[in-house]
Amino acid sequence: MWNLLHPRKLGHLTSAFFAQHLQYRLEILFWLLSHAWPFFWMALWSQAAAGGSLAHPPTDYVRYFFFAWLAGVFNVTWSGYLLSYAVRSGDLSFLLLRPFPPFFDFLTEHLGTNLVQLPLAALVAAAVLVLLPETRALPPLLPFLALLVLYFAFEYVFGWLLGSLAFWFEKSENFYEFYAALRVYFGGMALPLIAMPVGVRKLLLWTPLPYYAYAPGALAAGWPLDLGRAALVLVLWTGFVGLLAGVLWRAGLRRYGAVGG
Amino acid sequence: MRYWRVLFRNLATWLSAEMAYREDFLAAVLTALITTAGRVFALWGMFTAGVDFGGWRFEEALLVVGAAVVLMGAFAGLVEPNLSAFSRRVFQGTLDFVFLKPLDTQFLIMFERVSLWGLPDLVAGTWLIVAAAQRLGLSLAAVLALLGGLGCAALLFYLLAFGAALVAVRSMYVSNLLHFLAAFLQAAQYPATAYGRGFRWIFTFFVPVYWMTQVPVEVVLGRVSGALFLALGFWLALALAASRLALRLAMRSYTSASS
Image (cartoon, rainbow over all chains, first blue to last red; front, top):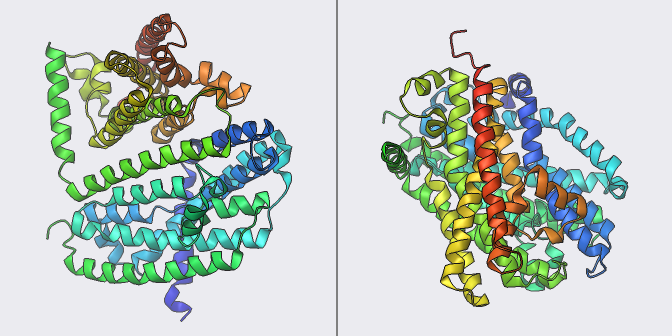
C-alpha cells in the first residue's frame, strides 16, 4: 500500500518543483505582496475600532487579518488552473504516462511552491511582528494547522473537479476564478463573518468558505469558533466533492483526445 | 488615423480569439456578478458594523467602489494582457519584431491586444456608478464626466504599470509585479479617509490610486474643485513623458535572443 503512493518518486518531484520555483523567488515574493491586501482591510478595520465604533478592540482586528492572510498564503490551491491548462494544451498526455495519477503530480507542485513560500512568508511575517506588536500572540497551533491542512485538502479536490470541466469546455480556469471570488467575499477575507447578518453567517458556516480565512483569523483573535463543526463540515464536503471529482475525471479521460481527438 | 485602424484591428482579432471558449466566458461573467455583489455586500457590512468613512454616505462610497471596479476592468482587459505579452517578448527575444514595425514602439506594446475578461468588470463598475448616481440624484453630465475622468485615470494607471513592467528587461517575469500594483486598486475602492495617515500618504504619492478613484468622484460630487481634473491631466502628461524616457533607457539593456 505504501509503495502504491510512490513516496520516493513523489519526494523527488517535490524537490524538483521546489528547485524550479526557487528560481523565481523574487516573483513569489511579489505574489505574496500582491495578495497582501488583507493588510489594507486590517488598517481600515483597526482604524475604525480605535475610534470605538466597533464591537471588538483594534487588537482583535489586527490579529484577525494578519493570521487570515497567513493562512491564505498556504491553504489556497491552483489545481483547477493546472488541470484546465494541461487538458487544453495536451500536456496531460505526458502526465498520464507516469506511474502515478496526475493528481499527485500537481500535489507535489503545490508542496514545492509552499516550501519556497515558507521562508518568504516568514520574512514578511517577521516584518509584521516587529511593526505590529499586537500580532505577537500565537493562535492555538494545533487547531490552526489542522484547519490549514483540512481546507487545503478541500480546495485541492474541488479544484480537481473544476479543472475536469475542461474536458468538456476546453477551458475552465474562470470557474476556479468564480470560486476564488466567493472565497474572498464570503470566506471572511473582505468582510469578517462577525460583521455579517446572523442568518448569512449561520448558513456560511455549513459551507467550506469561512474555513479559508475567517476560521484561522477568528482563532487568532480569540473569537468563538466551533472546531468540531469546522472539521465535520470540511471532511464531509471534501468527501462529497472528491466523489464527484472522481466521476468527472474518469468520464473526462474517456473524452480526452490529447488535442488531436 | 493609421493608429486608430491598427488599434481597432488588434482589438478585434483578440476579441474573436477569446470568444472561442464560451462556457469559460460565461463563468467569467458570473464571477464579475458575484464579485460585484460581494463588493456591495462588504461595503454594506462595513457601514452596518460602524466603520468610520469620515462622513461619506453609503451611495457616495459606492461611487468610489464603482470607479475602482472600472479601473480593475481596464487592468484585466488591457494592462495585464499587453504587459505580460511584453515580458514574454523580452524573455523570448521576439521584441525585435515590434521594433521592426513602422509604428511607435510604445503604442504597439501597450495596445497590441485586449482581453475579454476586462469587460464584465467594466460593465459592473459602470452599472454601480450609474445606480449610485441615480440614488444621489446626479445628472447624466456628471456621470459622463466621472467616466471621462476614469478614462484618464485608467491611462495613468496603465503608464505607471508600464514603467514598472520595464523591469522585465532584467527580471523576465512581471505578472506578479503587475498584480501587486493592482492590489492597490483593491484598497482604492474605499475612500482614503477610512485608512490611517500612513496609508493615505502611500495612496496619494507612492502608488497614486487616490487620484484615480477618489478625486474624480469628489469632483463630481462637488466636494473639491474641478481644477483637480487638471491635476490629473498634469500627472498624465508627466507619466507619459517619463514612460517614453524610461522605455528608451530600458531598451539599452535589451539584448534580443542572440546576445
